[in-house]
Length: 452
Image (cartoon, rainbow, N blue to C red; front, top):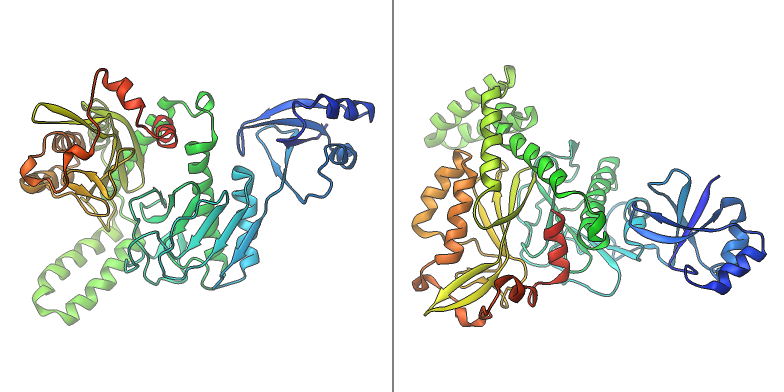
């Protein structure tokens, strides 16, 4: 028997349950884990009209969504998807995609707008906001790849880079497609709705799907039913091996694009002919006979990942295409015999073709204004001084564990001579570090870290 589930109304109301029973409507309290974790009243589908009237919801518009229980559909009400300040293809089609993928997860009104190559402040009004071709900071100017999630990008204008203030959504090749900032603001970095084409709708759907997964993991799922840490670690290990092995399996489209770009270089810049021709010949050979990653190389990357997991100060690891994200334990710095709690960090090592070797450090819960660290300002790459050359060599050899160890040491022991912000702005550590730290950690960020 097909059941319909209503969440948030009548679960603990004895009078409503008695009215339902008197009307001959058999109900049960049911739990679902997808599209979001929820508990509600379930009743037979053929009793929908009577049950909704007794529940006092007859004036609502309902949307149905499948759940992880074959015989239960959830009824979503009190929210919808709106499009405003639009510029591009048919907004109704993009609203339909968000309604199908995101609405069942967030169960809050979703507003889609197009700032159209302008920055947009974060909005925290109880709604989910999707901003297309925008960012909370910075400006566009990033050259886009040919494809995202294997789909051609129909409008390859310039895109925004991630602001570094939220959780980045990557495509399957490590391109930063969007960023979740604040409570529920989704910034899509390029003009994904320019034509309203089938490819653009599919790319928008992929972004919505990744955002739905991230929002579930970050704020909607109770800790006790989150994916096991070991499963996340295994997935990250496989992704790490894939990233490191990618040089043995180059993407034919990327190779072809490199060939085309270099042919222009050969024509326009005489002084770079030798380098461009040499690179072209190598790409052409790989295009004809792509080498495969030998088994010993895969074993080496697997062993390197195990080393990374055991680096002192590493709390958890998340690997996505093109990026290794390392979450640290609380960073504590000592100055004049006083210990200061700087906070937990996320260290990103970028391994995509566009930004290979870049390192970013984000303070997850103890940023002081625009400062992540006495020597790291928001939206600025860390200056590692004489460590830079060493870190570059290590990342180039995929010796990520040693590189992360050095970055953690830098965060803990960088010289006061290089500090640009007064360390006394951070709290002093007293007594038990773990207990002290709990006073400062933000709940949502801790949930995100623990879920990885």
